[in-house]
Image (tube, rainbow, N blue to C red; front, side, top):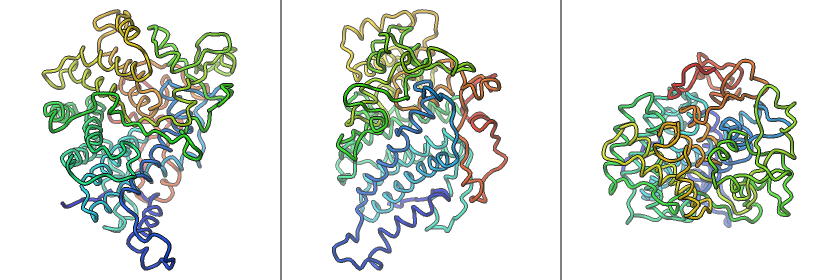
Length: 492
């Protein structure tokens, strides 16, 4: 097996060097006979998974930033689109650090002759790269992570299309590499506990996710990937049941506590944290009598459900206060042994439903896939069968019912199912404009009619990476040029 490790950014050079010191040069430097001289590849995969979870599903990015942009959450009393140079730099650093750990896992897995572990690490690297390009747009990728092999200090920035195509190539490589009878993944697999088949399904599901995201920008390439996956279910299985969900479950004992709980958890049930639900989410659930409402949110002090409402008068809105705005439900924010959701089976069903409905692939039943997606999402949230059956008959939920199109129904139900995957939900809202979010933070409401288009590039890259493309347009920190796949007209 010839393995390519062609990928990282300047900001992770230090991490790469540190990791190298723990492997190739460690024996020469180490003088302590009781200290480890070899780092197993599985251990580094564990570090990559933890770093990925802590940044993507941690309080700052998942609740405050992307959570607000996605229409899921808000911070009462502030509720704005906060920008801090240090935090912004650290989010970029953490994303690329997680990819660096994944690349190091690949290198060590090659030395150990473990193709399954290599494929899992490549899947995770591609997953994080997809998140990164959807957050910022152009990123260093094809020349990233090549400091040791090629001496690249200032990796070039690839276009979003180039990154997407490389991600699809990498995921296809990983998908063809998994071997259910091959080497075990080891104790560092905190995501699937060594289940290679679940990694295989996760990898192929990601191929569908990436393809659907790019489908409005490059329909031909997207359709080819979707056909390759769905047309070969034996070779390329995907998630089909909640048992397949890519959820990292936390031990629940300090210091290994679920990140949302760390910030907003209340063991006595007396929740006081300022992070709350967003009006967009609550309204979407209320409008269709969604039985997930009491799971996603708590009743406010007066026995009702209400989310924080963004807009120019948000700080003067007498209902935008701690008594009126609903807290986040216990399943998501008040369980020390809770989960960080990388992907779920419900989303895969909605991906299929969209592909069938838009004729991106032939031979599928869009309604069946749509109903399955709703059922899977409700079941994982503890909703019983009679309530699921009733919900599927709601006018604006039922296939061919109400006034909204079936495609809009797919988009909305997918977005609801992605709660707690805020970066993903934000991307879907930018791609589809469903749900329609016209309320913008008071600081920007006069100039913009949609939530942010992108994250701001870190000052560290602008000042240290001589390859930084200064032709990228950034307006008001969070706006500027729409991403490659964001084809919404008349948004600013």
